[in-house]
Length: 209
Image (cartoon, rainbow, N blue to C red):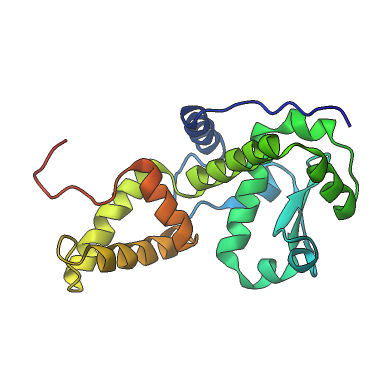
């Protein structure tokens, strides 16, 4: 198989791609982002649950060679809403960022897909997945909306007796759980987004810099 060329996107590029995506496909910016509706109705991509996908191939989902179908592990589809939503956003990231890459791949089944993945060198595949993962986080947890809801979550934590600057670890856990419910993603996604945006801990009221 010929070498697959993976386009390089900086974090700034990925942020701009995600913002352009939201502007076009979800201009109201309501939270949670209706990723399933965007996939099905705006991109015209079919979502197909498949029993045992995760167990057999250690993936929650994958997108078809022609970018028309996202196959998702049936258990995740039915029982793990956060993972299901992130899987859709991740695979949609491949559509937005990696269309030319997938057009070079030749696979029809999950077994073919696995062989294609294994034929890509580890560094290129790692870059491919990092980009899609970052895109998914930026789309499902946009910076402006995260900022706004972070402030509300900190206030709520304080009202519940969890003081941010006296109980930092407990406060962060509380805030991340609250935000995860708000955005309908995992606490791990929220944790990474807060770190990536460098907005934890929030500044004390009245401080700058």
